[in-house]
Amino acid sequence: MSIIIKTAEQIEGIRKSAHLAAKTLKHLEQFVIAGAKTIDIDRKCEEFIRQHGATPATKGYRGFKHACCISPNDVICHGVPNETCLQNGDIVNIDVTTILGGYFGDTCKMYYVGEPSQYARELVETSKACLKAGMKQCFPGNRLNNIGFNIAKIAHKHGYSVVYEFCGHGVGLKFHEAPDVAHIADENTGPILKPGMIFTIEPMINAGKSRSKIDRKDGWTARTIDGRLSAQFEHTVLITEKGYEALSDLYHDF
Image (cartoon, rainbow, N blue to C red):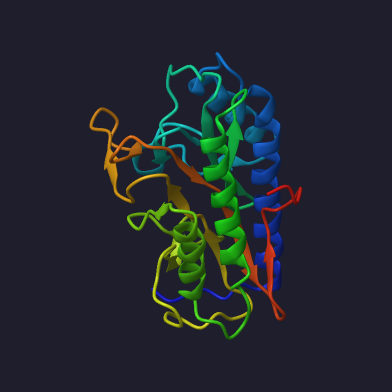
């Protein structure tokens, strides 16, 4: 599958969708509190997306039944909203993908429930730094895998591991397109970045081992193999003539 170079019209459509995904994450902040059920947060997510003329891309995708993925604590990604109540001290990732006007925008971020431990905060801040390090490698002429090489360098420096079983991906005209964006990779390898490429960078950083295990009861929820914490931030990124634009970074707060 070849990497799609987006047209100016397509870029604008994807930008609008990514902005809505970012607005959705901002809207959900008020509901991420101790005692909240993740299924109720998911309902608020779907309500907001549909009120803005869009649909949640995850709902119905390969049998997934919800408008977003909600992944607390040791859940790496693809957490299924359910009756679980959030507790003070939790860290939680919410991942939203919108379809607006036929275009896809994808983003996720971490939330604190009450007052997490310093240990948890350091992991979250490092995962944010990993995303930023990856985005700095986004400029024409660079090699794609330098994104993952530099993400892993930051994570390992702080004593964390990088999940290699899941990756970023091309996005915009479809939910998942070429290329796959590895978050740990060899330096100076992979396709050459060109203006008009759009893909996600979404490093999953673990406090312990890098491996995951999938919950048998729902077939989706991916947890750390050792039960230790995981954190993740994600942006939809456009390669421009001079560098990059994080299309989902509407508020410039992560």
